[in-house]
Image 1 (cartoon, rainbow, N blue to C red):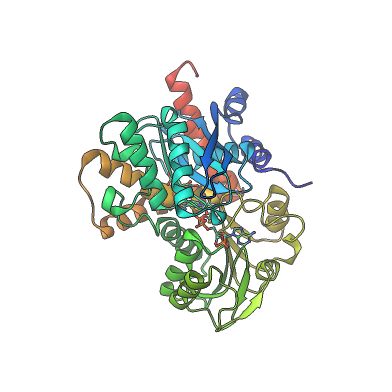
Image 2 (image 1 turned 90 degrees about the vertical axis):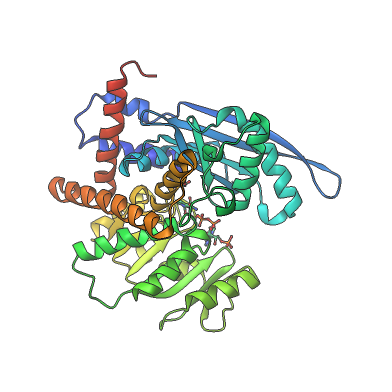
Length: 414
Ligand SMILES: NC(=O)C1=CN([C@@H]2O[C@H](COP(=O)(O)OP(=O)(O)OC[C@H]3O[C@@H](n4cnc5c(N)ncnc54)[C@H](OP(=O)(O)O)[C@@H]3O)[C@@H](O)[C@H]2O)C=CC1
Ligand SMILES: O=C(O)CCC(=O)C(=O)O
């Protein structure tokens, strides 16, 4: 039976626990969120009717600093998913040595069915609902699936109106014009590229002629395509909710992005052949990059996978059962809590810039991201080799070590 995301998180913590010598109580604490706010959001739609949406914001753990994590708009969003995503943020921030804990939020909705005015009303209602639960030194949201800089700007604006003063670092992933950081839009993919480059070096694969398939063509997936093309890695297949496209000679990134913007899907791109998402997962690409949702690689399709490396740009894309089968077959899985940490790392830079009022150029942001994420890669790679464990277990070992140490030093917890 497939585990839900929260059960996946708890299983991943249990798997790592075997390699960490700390009191078991820390694991009990780490498997539970500290608090979760549930809000109902009545919104008057353009046809005059009122629809009530449900939203959540979870505070998972703040031993290392303010809660940090994105906001998701999706029809699948539910309480357990938000908890799992907040738990993964807790591990991720500790892996990257950020002064943050983990949080996450979401609204159960279908943004594609809302007009822009309805989306703004819903966002402002959510911002009002969670305003007492966020703050620059308390909980700092950011974008995730189906949310973007415009939505972050509406949340910042609503929050500042409630407080009556400017508070740019209450949220990250804002447009540059209102205090966002250069480099944040591409940061998740850019961090993924830095991590992948280190992995290829470590495996002695860097001089090979490599191909890649990307599942999900939103912020993370489409920027990844662009950056891989620049690196000389051929992207032969990509997909979104409406289908996929395949070309063994490589798909051109800019043209495909333009096609996606015009048609709202990658399918029917003239320079490729339409495929299903399942066909993408089983394509003959060397590297598979899930950049959509949780649990997409699971017991039902894992045996089809031929890639040698899986770079998890999505959160929780590989179920623990599928991970075991893939690892037994020698597939390297570069875990989400490292592979997609570029987003929150640059969010941290945005938070720092907003607090100091000094803004950096893009090459400074990129260099700082490179330094931080490659250091995290090298640390995890060393632990993986020394303890002979999976990369995910090594990442959890280092993160849980840091979080439990902070809990211990703080003394009484909570
Ligand atoms: N944005 C960020 O800063 C970060 C994001 N992440 C993670 O990366 C992943 C993607 O996020 P992001 O790019 O921001 O989100 P977006 O909303 O920008 O893009 C999500 C993409 O996934 C596609 N998708 C959704 N469901 C499926 C499916 N069943 N099959 C194929 N494609 C699907 C969507 O298709 P369609 O275009 O048709 O809607 C869309 O192209 C998520 O797991 C997120 O948590 C991780 C770290 C940071
Ligand atoms: O940028 C951030 O603060 C968080 C991004 C996010 O939600 C994630 O890494 O999953």
